[in-house]
Length: 371
Image 1 (cartoon, rainbow, N blue to C red):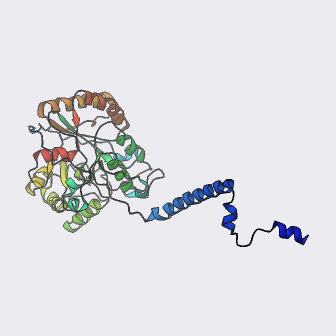
Image 2: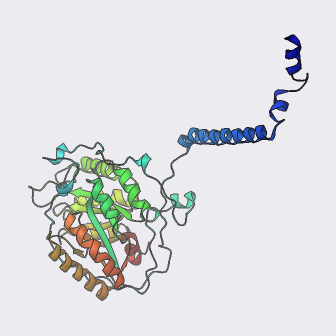
């Protein structure tokens, strides 16, 4: 027995590695095992390091430095139309009074950390961007604007429904979406929109003439003290990041009050924002006060859905086309009504075939702003 064991014993000094590599089959098995272990280790290391990556802010690149087209000033439609439809009509949660709005994310809302960030087609160095005013720093990339009639299509009252944000984001044209500052999970929605190449504004709630209409939480009111008015303005402006400027939500009473509006405009001017006067009243002082402060500013030309009916919306869009052909540029405002979205899904491709160019509000502002 002992002699048999001694006969089977491996020669002294032969290591385990020598024995494993003595056979080609064993060598192949060994190599395969090493590859599997290496791959598994790489995946594990990647998972460990991934949370340490810093999330970069989306850097949208503006084409504002490109030569601007020579465009005659648009003919502005004089209108006191106040769009009566409440933004709460298509929200993600029931609301009885604006004060009861809950700011927690809705079930389908995407937190900012979960929104996949995409690199811009061209990147301006962080140092340069930090020196740019917000209306340029966050501007969407605009196509060359020479030789075509321009349409800046702004959709107000955005943010209360994540589903509608996605539907607007999927429309086949460059849009500017104006988000209500009290909407839930705002930053994630804003990043989703900017990642898709669209531009973002803040839709600032202001007091309407009709006191039965509620503009929403933290609205700017003419009855507020100067201190409270400043505090509310700052809270609203701090509600999210990545927007080029502000336009008024309602505000037919507030925008007509030059003293109150001046307080708001001073704060916006300090932040380097542009101002789009929605012109919910012809008595608005917004555009004038912005211009006096050297702010980039423009005025709305036409509402496309103050009558929420597909045929009526199409008639308004025909006016948009005519104004763009006549003046070279037009600023149109709509809202995230399902009827509006259905009409835009059909109209936008046809308008592009006709030669109309859709540009962000910052690009239109740059045509006339000399600062």
